[in-house]
Image 1 (cartoon, helix red, strand yellow):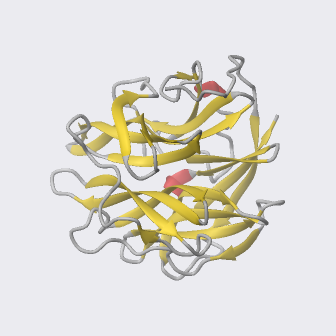
Image 2: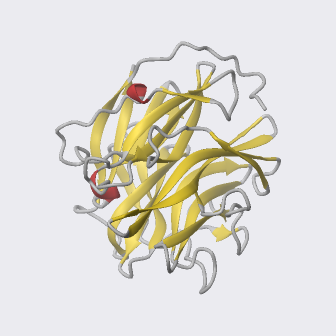
Length: 325
């Protein structure tokens, strides 16, 4: 499968990101239900603002989704912080009864689709995950599950779990890049998950077909890569993603970094990895000098805006950067 009318240019652009800092800082202001974290910032362009969904850790330790509205002209300026979660977690025994983690929001006709990672606590491993879908009919303020069950789950070829979907709708085809667990490794007798980015496609955004195709090959046996974010620009499909090792990755030397890849020959399944061109450098800033994780890139006219988490998996909020090309 190819993207048809999109002309491909093999020359990679060189770019850098101008960091605006920890724009949403929970130490300054946060909803009462949030104990910590504003993970996986997920942008949605609205008429006069950028709505950024985020995953907060509740006082009960459950992950739930809410949002912050930023000024579209100046994304460092907060306009509004929603005080409640946009959707409740699932009932007891459901696939998302322990938490929901936002990863992709898109507008479809008069509705907004919010694709999310769901998790529930497990026994021999810490958790099991699947992909769910919430639908909003009030311009993204609140969401209801499309189904009580997941739209993507483990399968006979993917036996562990699936997470972090990113979805694009183009030429009557829905494209999804997601991460699929390929193994669990024991580190100091504790199981740590390993996962790689794969691809699925759909005719309606609800029912997905997948061929167990790995898009981003790991650099090492224990590398985990996830949270793909894909845009089309200058005739290219471009992907930013996050990757880590499996040992001492919680703000340690193998913690998350942001990688980059470009599609080869217009194919959504074939990617050339070139992490040195991600454009985001680890610096001296105290909010992302140990970790850079969970990128989401949105195009606003000629501008590219990057949302991501810094140290501690976004324990204190999320960061924003603008492309400087």
